[in-house]
Image 1 (cartoon, helix red, strand yellow):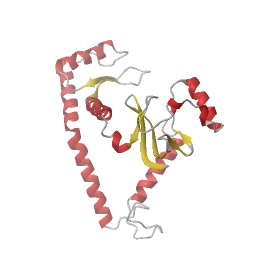
Image 2 (cartoon, helix red, strand yellow):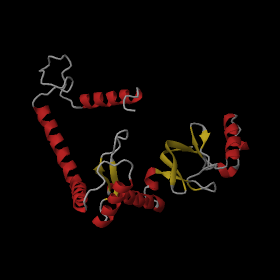
Image 3 (spheres, rainbow, N blue to C red):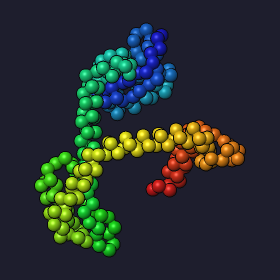
Image 4 (tube, helix red, strand yellow):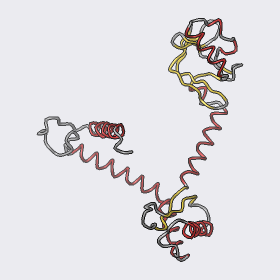
Length: 237
């Protein structure tokens, strides 16, 4: 029996399961915690196999359901995470994900107008900000004239174009502004550490709080726990 770490099982280019390790039997079949790694898609077959696993009657499971390293008759490909990272379908999926992320980054919203009493949602245009001004302008006009109870539907083309230009410039400079904000936060953090700031009580208490700590992770962990508590109690719903 051989133990193999960081296993990935894939079907049709989609990762179905990740396991920290599996044990490979002499016949090549893969097992995890005493249970065979199976590849079954038919619900009826899966139910029968599940009952066989619970009863420890592995001989009742069809041979093609058992999984080995590499391509399997049951449709699964199984290998290590490192091997999966070099597979053509993984590289193709990564490329598609990168393209999708890039396209998503182009989507912005432009505030056009408030609405009348009883409807507090703004009238907005949402779409790809890299498209021509004329196309965005026409769609903004549609939002204003076809929207429900829009307060200021009769805006001029020049007024709308200003909003489009401003939104595009904010989108264009967003990476620079985020980088600058991260740099400023890091510089502020280093200054606090150097000056003896206490991240336990979040002041320069010089130890008076009784839990003096210059480790910023104290604050980060507390903020994370507070956020989780608020989420669990529905405060942010």
